[in-house]
Length: 521
Figure (cartoon, one colour):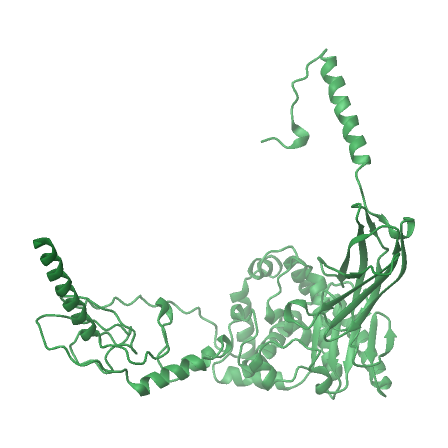
């Protein structure tokens, strides 16, 4: 199929009528486009006059938009559209309108931000505008406005130094100035290393204690938030950092700010592996802690080093999270020390084209990820990484097929303890009832109460996904197979499988006799 600009028309030399017809169509199209309804500024439209508009932060709950206008006609709806920092998408929602006091129209919208999918970090710049549609279908746009989404629980002061702004509250101005100076210094160091632009403003919100900060952060997981205190978080799309004041706040500020520079260098298409992202952030840290080095040495000495190809996200174990930081810092130290800053900037730019880490490393350094890992391991004195070879798939042993397979029951509905050789498969929870010769029908038996209680407890207290790895290593604890719709709750008063089978046989014989008797009639 040809593209639109390559279409061929059946006009040949001398076809004047065809050319005139084509020109007429073009003129009609231009006239139609020129008369299409397009939104105009509300300030310039006499029928709609904006009296006031505002946006207010109510962090951490959300933000509130208000609009007052005068209109000669009824307003159908008012849509609020807003952009958050440098995010590539816009969001919108509709206002609740009050038109009881004409010509005054009041609108209000509360946009929640206290959920994971709607979270906006404090300090983010938000640009918003209103689109007003009246009953005639005409739409009017207000001019865009911008406000800073600050934590509404406190009154904030600020210190600005170059491209760094520190928001603080309370008598901590000296600390805020010291942090701003450290951030500017780190900016000068890490700008060339990452190749990122350093002119766009970075806003940092300083919290005085963990009680203040805990409401502002996004936790990685419940286990991590219980055992590790988050000292800082960076949000690259918004160029925002939140930081906890303390002895290590200079390290936190410079670490988190480097995350923003790394993201700028790689761009929106770049996928930066965690070991590189955290390693660069620690390289830019002006107050490095020895804790990460100690955990790295512990992991090396106990053969717990994490393969770099597996460090795409943080481990669920807080101890291994600290190992991940230490590994990342050590690998980046090696790369910059051995090959220089310019190649690191080239690596981030290459990742920004959208190709993966292996291809990017090959293009810049001449080796892929496994080659980098073993070069680094050799420098620190660790054993080389060898890709595990998958073993052969075991062949299951053939088992005899029973004469009849009449009934398949979940474990809690079948016999409490099947006898050896009765055809049961305790691994799958499948009880096979075989009928070889008539026997006396036993009395129904209730399921084992103790087994039911254990199953009920495990069903009620089943851990979430993040805790499965620890429990699967518990000796003697088999993994439950939840497939097949098996009900884990105990079935009180269930009938024994053999009894149920014989009951079906008896009912069938009785029914058969009645049918034969009816036919004889």
